[in-house]
Image (tube, rainbow, N blue to C red):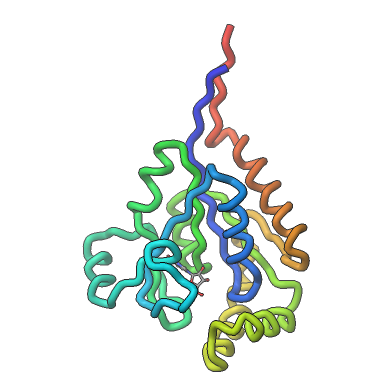
Length: 200
Ligand code: 5GP
C-alpha cells in the first residue's frame, strides 16, 4: 500500500510552570517524526539554553528587520519580551511530510489557529494555581518579579484555554504524556493529512 502524509502542525501552549517544556522535550525525544520550530526572541539567553536549539536569540533591530520582511507566521510580546515563529522553520518541513511542533503563547497560537485551520492545538493546564506557584519557585529560572508577572499572565491564559482543540491537565507527567501521545497518534490518521492509496 502506498501512502502519503502531509505534515502536522502541532501547537502547544500553557502557562509557565505547567510542565509544557518537559512534555515538549519528551515528545521530541520519543517521536522522531516531529521537529521543533526554533523561535526568535529578544529576551536574554538563560544559562541552560543553547543558541539556535532553544531559541534564535536576536536584537530588537534584527527582530524589526524580520517583521519588515514578513518572515513570521505569528509573533507576540510575552512577559515583556518579543517572540516570533519563522515561516522558514515550518512550511518547507510540512511540505516534506514532517511534523512540526510549536511551543508558543496563546496570542501566537490564536494567530496560527486562524491561519492554519488544520493545526492541532493543545493547551497544558496545571492542576492548580498553587501548584503553578510552587513549580515556578522551584525551577528557579526567574526572579520574584518575573514569577509574579508569569502568575498573573497565567490566569488570563487559562481563561482562554477552551479555544484549543485539546486540553491536558498535567497532574502527573506520565499520564499527561500518554494523553499527548494519544492525541498525536489519532491526529496522524486524520483525513486532513493522511492519504493511503489502496491498491487493486
Ligand atoms: P520563555 O521565555 O519562558 O522561554 O517563554 C515564554 C513564553 O513565550 C512561553 O509561553 C512560550 O511558549 C512563548 N513563546 C516561545 N516562542 C514563541 C513564539 O515564537 N511565539 C509566541 N507567540 N510565543 C512564544
